[in-house]
Image (tube, rainbow, N blue to C red):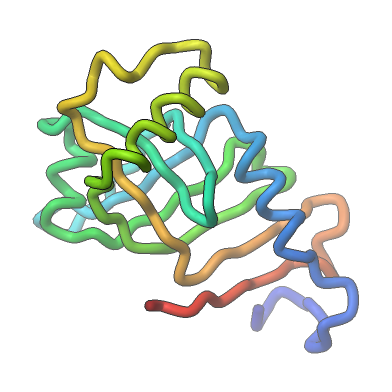
Length: 151
């Protein structure tokens, strides 16, 4: 992370498990998408970190859904900036029935809200390409970037 005074070595870097715990525990997430005219759009969403990706649902006509249909690249951030996890990735529609049912079940358990009544609305899966972990209390020496296979 050039310009931040962070050591070049790997000693003290955060493990991916640190990031995944925060991604799983976060209640609210920020998602940033890109409008057709290339302006950013950020919004708070509820969602789930499961099976190595971030999953959320939104109305088919929402700005997020319309943006992602044109440009699937996006950013997801956890709610706690003092122990931030920022995930850059690509969204795709979740169509597989078994995965959708799993999402509804886990979502209801986490948020105490039955999403299955909105079965016709899109569910997006975001797979990370790059992620950043920033632990405020130990920033120097722990600021971490992870890169993922882009398959």
